[in-house]
Length: 406
Image (cartoon, rainbow, N blue to C red; front, side):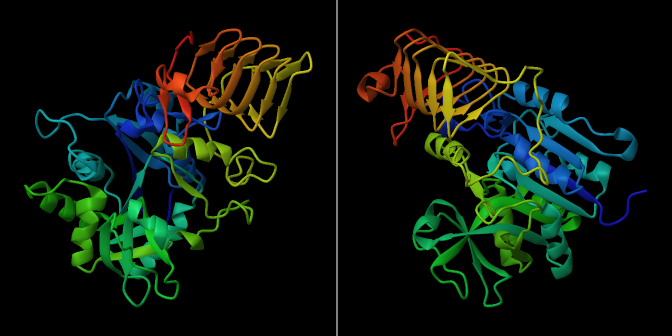
């Protein structure tokens, strides 16, 4: 018999992820592979499961087949205990329309909340890379008696204007204003050079959430967005507080990766997050066994290095073969083959990629099952690459899924 507060976790996973194209051309953003062995959605789900919050509904919409399949195959839970991780596609329960925003997604799925009848509802995003114990945030939410608690991460004021920003009252806890990408972000009391950036993670009292969603649904001027409408509404009512992510203590964290959080909404931030993984003392440590990132593991044999093949400061997935090639500062997923004489530097290669002999791949992301022929070049001549592929602002070349490079 379970004791303690009753919680339903809702993961918002319907995002299209246009800024991650072409990686999202055939899949929802939360289904995009990450770190050679995971999908983006695995991070939030691992945080919930590790914390013991095991009633989870994942709301999906955009090109959701691979995401739905991944959740169903990877995240089965013991139903006898009432636990579940369930993908919930858009069902048009309130008429012939899709979700018009994150708040509308939950409003159209209120049946999930009514069926579970929880004391509290967690609403988290599905496309950030981080470790967090959400139970610690829930305990603060309960202790303060707030209607909603918003997770905030400290960021330099000079960089905060690209996010939703939380302005607190003098107590440093009550949210005074919730600002969407303000030109002059407010500082934190006692740390004026820093601002609280919203992580897109919330805990609600169930009654508060339902009342706010119903009020928002009939507001024709609303964008029906959690961060843009629901949180400002509850802030005006004096019901919102902030949770300082710096206070979250995850078992097994190191001083270097404690408090790590990455919004991987663009190609450049997605690439940078991969580069955070590969140093000797990584900025984000995948090897924390006390708080593992969980995912499905295909039945491949161990990675193999033959004919003098080598990899330095890199991650190499199961089933991959580096045959006389040289890899540096790269993330290599499972079932990748890199042939003799090839050079791979600063690259992210997803499952099934094939790199031909004497090829060069630099500062590039290759989606699943791409093929680079012998003597192929990617990331060497950016002017040429712009005519063939997507090239980011920072010069990262992205090759879409299943492309054979010519």
